Structure formats: structure tokens, C-alpha cells
Length: 366
Image (cartoon, rainbow, N blue to C red; front, side):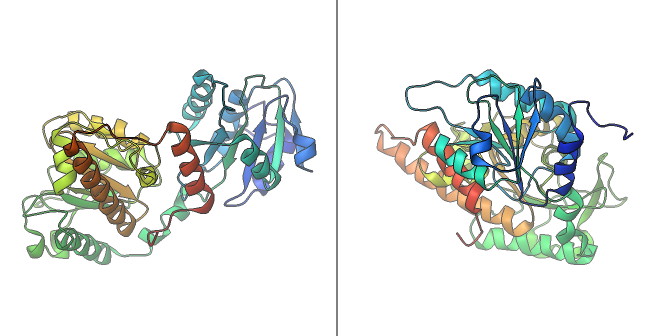
């Protein structure tokens, strides 16, 4: 007998979960889903709800951190409506088991059927909720997601932090001693020191802060170390964080405005808008708590009356994301200045984009 296996997980399903590799997808289908006409590998879980199965699967399953949304559900057919409680139940079931919520997107019904054909398996459940089907995508264990960081020694990582700071200045995303940069390291992070111009920082100046907030004697980390730790605790896939006071992002933050769906690239953060979290004094636990909530929704967020935070699997991706959001912020400010009504992409249109990013991936060079 195995310990810690949820009773809803049958031996057949446990075997499938063990066999699945990185990038494989599993369909949890409702009781009315045409599973047998779409797939040859169908496992039955009669009488069991999808929320119950998700609660049992989540502790055994690594959700893919390399895609925008490892959870996929169906969009409503035109003229039909979705019950938001269904999605809420699913996400709460996952969070109760693993303490975080992967991103979720929705795709067209027939795209969902087509995607099912390429899944590893389909689980027929007793779920009766309308549009209750969900696809979950398997990823690498968190250890493997951090191999790039683990392969670099402290000095190399520290130099990469400095190079990223200098590149932020070169790109016009920062000025003076504003902003800060960190990478996940051992049981904590490496972060820029407080109050030092970037061009004067050496690898020896970079500060190690552990997950409890304790830093090395004789070194002072950036005053924003609390929200950097908050990002790593909120997003398991994040290995790097950049924070800046770029011109247009800071401008929008002063207006306390999120960036709505003015362009499909707003989806780079993993949702249909770039949120702006409430104002709090810099370097405080209050600000870190706002960051923690905001960054769970999007990999990039604005801080009211402050600036931008972007995170990624590595420093290059975090910096790339910061550049993309700065461009989006510049467009939005210019549109606001016209005084005209700004047409926005609908939630459904943005969900299609998120699904495309999920399916095809979004590379830095794109």
C-alpha cells in the first residue's frame, strides 16, 4: 500500500500519472464528454468530481512552468454563459493541495476537442458541471527548472545580476540607484546592495538573503528585499526578479492604472491585463504583501506611485518581460492622452491569445 495517495486516484490513473513526461497533457472530462470517440486511452472515474480528482492529483503532479497557462478549459459557445464557480472550485482544489495556483486559460470548444486527441490520456469523471472539462499539462520537477541557476556559481550569478542592472540602465529602464535585481540562490536569493550605483557594484557587493530574511553580516541588501522574497514564494517557477522605475511604467503607476487588453502582447504576463497593485511605502511588509497577491496573477505588475516588477525563469527572461511591459505602458499612456475611447480586446479574444502562447510557447526573440 502506498501512503499519501488520495482515495480518488485509481491504480490505472496512478500508472498514467507516473508514465507522463514533461509536456504531456491529461484531460479530466465531464460525464458527457465524447472521450471514446476522441481518444484510445480512456480511464474511468465514475462518480468522482473533477475538483476531487484535482485535489488528489495536484500533490503528485508538476504543473508545467514553461508555458503561460498549464491549465486549459473550454470557452462558452457564443450566446452561452460560464459558471465562474466551476473554475473557482478547481483552482481552490489545487491550491488546497499544493499551496499555489497555476495559470488557467480557455480555448474554443473544437480546439479543446482537437487538443484532446493529442493528450496522453482522458479521465472520464462523474462531473456534471457545464464546461467542466479541464486539461492539465505536466512539467519538470522544480529542481530541473532551476538547473540553469544551480549550474552557475555565486560569483557568476552575481556578475549576471550586475550585467542585468547595467543593461537596464542602457535600455533606459532605470536611472541612478533606482531599481533592484535578484536571482534565486540556495535557500534564498542573491540581490543587489542598497544605495550603490550600478557601475560601482562588484560581485563581492551582491548580498545573500535567506528565505527567512536573514542577510550576511556587513552587507545591506536592497531595501526592497521583502518583495523579492515574496515573488519567489508566490511563484515557484520564478528564478529571477527585476524591479525598475521605467518612464512609462512609473507614469502609469502614478495614475494607479493597470494596462488593459489594448494589444495581444498584454498577455505576456500570463493573464489578460498587467495589474497595478495598491500603494505602500517602499521597503515595507505591506508592499511585499501587495506584491505577493499581484504576482500570483501576472508575471509582471505595476506598483502604484512606484514602478514595475517582472519575474522569469532567468534574468534574461525577466528583463525581456520588463522591456515588453514598458513598451505596452508607453502605448497606453499615448492612447490615454488622446482622450478618445480606447477599444480593447475582449476577454474571449485574450483567452485565445493566452491559449496560443500556451500551445506554441513565447520565446524571447518573438
